[in-house]
Structure formats: C-alpha cells, structure tokens
Image 1 (cartoon, rainbow, N blue to C red):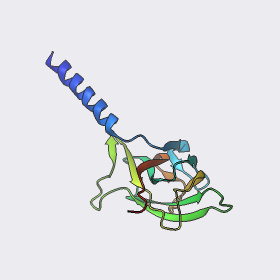
Image 2: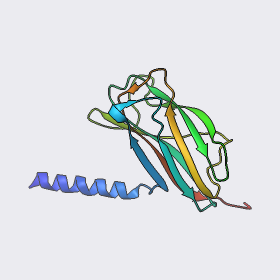
Image 3: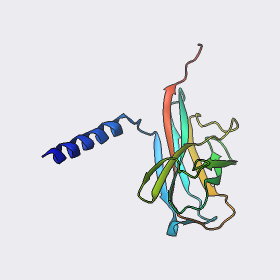
Length: 165
C-alpha cells in the first residue's frame, strides 16, 4: 500500500511541475533520418507573430544519445522575417556539456535533450508582426553527424514590453 502512495504522489508532483512550465508560442521538432545529421538535411520551422508588445525568446532543441562525440554543436541559423526577401544567416555554437564532460539538459537512459537559448545577435529581430521562416543546418566537420535524434525550435513569449518607462 505504501508503494502505491509513493507512486501516486510522484505522479501528481510531475503533473504539477509540468503545469508550471510556460506553454510555448511555437514548438516543433524534426526527427533526424537514421540518427545521423547530414549537411543536406536542413529542418525548417515556420511560425507567426501577432503580438508585437511581447518579447519572444527562441530556443534550440537538440536530442542526442550518450554516444554523441562532441561537447557542442555548431549550426547555421537562417532567419527570414516578415517582408524579408533574403534570409539572414548566423553561425551559432551551442554548448551541450560542461568542461568535465557532464551533459547539460535532461537525460533518460542513454538519451539527452537540451533546450538552449538561441542567441542570434542584434541584427535579427524576432518581434515584428508577421510570418517567420527559420532553418537550421549542422556545421560540424563531420558529415553526417552521428547520434543526433531530433532537432527543434521552441519560441517562448515572455512579458510584454513596457513603453514610456
């Protein structure tokens, strides 16, 4: 009987913690074919912004196995915003492990998932009204990049901007 109580309390605790996380404005993940990310596989993410009083924070989602051979990943992020005819391209280094080799993010068994803030610099504005197209391509020295399961984009809407303060 005691074990059932522990299981029920654990389940309810997990549900409460999950309910406290903010719902994303947008989130999508792409499965990597054969768990090996080739240069020519370029996931594309499309979303819209209608509330220009808010701030939007993009996150790079990276799911890999414990056998992933590096402590980081270099990616090219191409952003085509509303009214843009040409995408702006930024090279980003995403750190996946501490200097001692401990993976960042969450792990279950041999699978790890990282959700890292995507810093795109001041030249890219993700708060204009309209449709956005974001593409992510791996830019490591090895092709295909082994032990990569999923790549994704999450955009969170944060507190509204304050004007005149």
